[in-house]
Image (cartoon, rainbow, N blue to C red; front, top):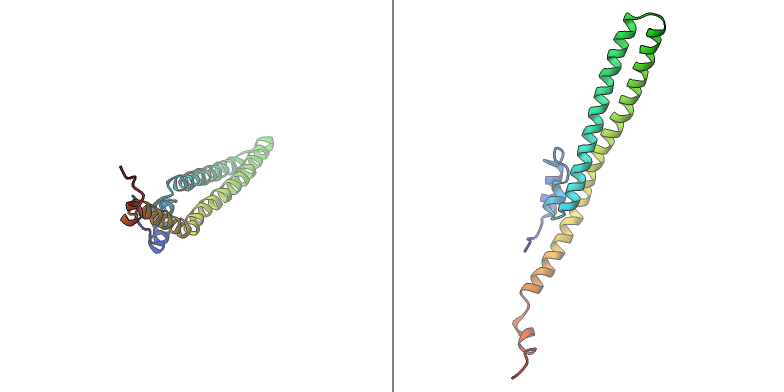
Length: 142
């Protein structure tokens, strides 16, 4: 049997530690699958941001190589650094967007998930503890 869920506690959990572990608010509300989806999206966002950082440093390396080169090699390194910086910007922005998207969705969805958990809890309570008067008259007589 589950228990009643406080919307305030759920939102507070979604904010912190939710900023580090996305989905904590939904997990608190009993929506484990949704919490796993949000945590997975956070993982992908961190991956995208990491790729962006890697491409940025690759671009810096190409830029340094271009400064030391001449002719066609210099042009190649300059083009490589431009492509690396562009890729870094794109993947970094996608990663940051995904990160905040999953975090804000956890904060936004948690109150409704807590309300639904309370409704489910009330229905479960009603089923488990029905009035004895309701069952008394329904018995078959022998």
